[in-house]
Structure formats: structure tokens, C-alpha cells
Image (cartoon, rainbow, N blue to C red; front, side, top):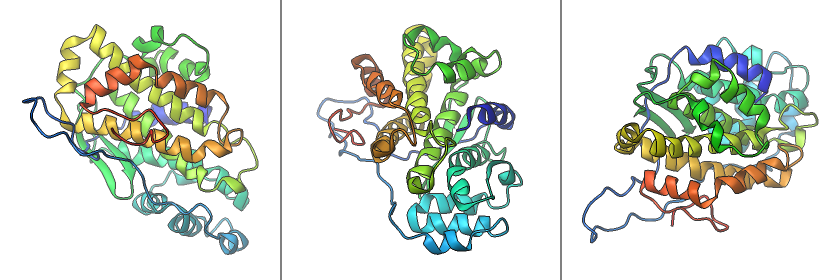
Length: 316
């Protein structure tokens, strides 16, 4: 995410509204008798071929064939990106996000482009109801629809729980800003999903990234997960009635679980490219996300145990 660009664009995008979502992970275990069977372990993954040859696409790239190139390169390397590009091919705003001057610049611009087109899909009025229900493009085979959020409280309320400066630049935009800080659970989830989709978009193209246009991709994913976990903690501790409302929504519990596992999956995939796709702060933020109090609230909310070993993209 380009922070300056995304702050301006997200403000515009969010006024479109947010939509609905479906369960995309194994359903959390409902409250019930102790003898009820435990759900099977679940691991998030999705197809990608980051070494697929793109030399012909790079050689033939020009400012006129960029959408065809975009779909072709992701068809080879990250089919979910191709699916999103096809779904959003008619969007008039692509040109604002895509660098068409060179193939390398084009690849680097995909973090912002895919991030913002995820917003455009998620926030389309045909699938969104402001502060009522949300939509989330997860990957080419999973889209969440009609996920209830029941409003919530301003996300700026999580600020007292952030004790470090690791996410300060994003905190200034999304939590301290008078407008952005007032967004509720819808805003937390919308930004989390778009930032997380922008990470694989550049992870699978990392060898073409020469500048700084994608240099905070990992930080964005880690920080938005931080915001989601802290939002759940504040909901439980300060807004018990709201906590009970959202905890009673299976689709929302499933979405939160999937996004947690999905973040772990793509942070691991992108870890070799720290420095190009993120700072060392991304791993420091991730470490705080796995603090016992954060894992505890996640597991209480979703009804699932998550792994904190090398397979962090899995439930236990």
C-alpha cells in the first residue's frame, strides 16, 4: 500500500459501503456438550508458482497491453490475482494505480493496484451494507459474502494497547486521523483484507521489484492483523454487549480465523524478501501479534486453537 495514496483512496472507497461474507475456513466449533467431536485441523494455502517464466511477457509489455499482461502473469504465478483482475477488469480506476512505463515498474505497482482493486471489489454497493455486513475477496476460490459486523466502536479505541512505535506511521493514518480513526469493525476488516491481498501480489513478482513502491507490503499485513486482534480485545474488555453480538456470528468468526491463518501463510512466503517487501519491523509486529493475550482472544472468538510453531498457517 502506498500510504499517502491509500489513505486518500480508502477514504473515498469506504464511503461506497462494505458487503457480505461467507465462511471460508472450517466452521468454528459451536458451544455444546464436551463430547462433541472437535473440528478437523485446517491449514490456509493457495496456489502460486513464483518461478514461472515471465520473460516473454516482459519483452512484449507496453502501455497498451498492460491488462492482458497483468492477467497472463498472474495466471502463471498467482491464479487468485488473475481471477481478481478478471473480476475487476472493467473498473475505471485501474489507471490510477498501475505504472505502465516499464515492466519492472508495472510489477512494483501491483501492491497498490491489487490492494485498491480489492477495496473496489469488497466495497462495491452490490455486496456491501455500511456497518451492517461486509464482503472480502480472499482468493480465486474463496470470497466472503454477507458477513455481519453489527457496527462496532471507533477503531481509534485500540491505540492505548499499542505500546511501541513499530506501526506508528500507519497508526497516524488509520487510528489518529479524525476521519479514519472513527471507522469501526468494517474499516478494520476492509483495510486488513486489501493489505493482505497486496502482499502476495508482489511476493510472486519480487525479482522485478527494484524500487520502494512495495517496500512496506509485509509491514502492512502484520499491522492490519495487529489492529484486528486488538479490536477484538477492546471489544471483549470494553464493549461486552458488542462482543457477544459478533461472537455469535459464525461467518465473522470464520473470516477472522481465515485472515489470521492467511496472514501467517503470506508473511512466511514473503519472509525471504524482507528489505525489498518490508522492514524488519514486520517480524517484530508479528511477534507481538502472537503474544499470549492476542492468541487467547483469537481462540476465544473463533472457537479454534491455532498453531504457534513453524506451521502458523494451521489450526491445531
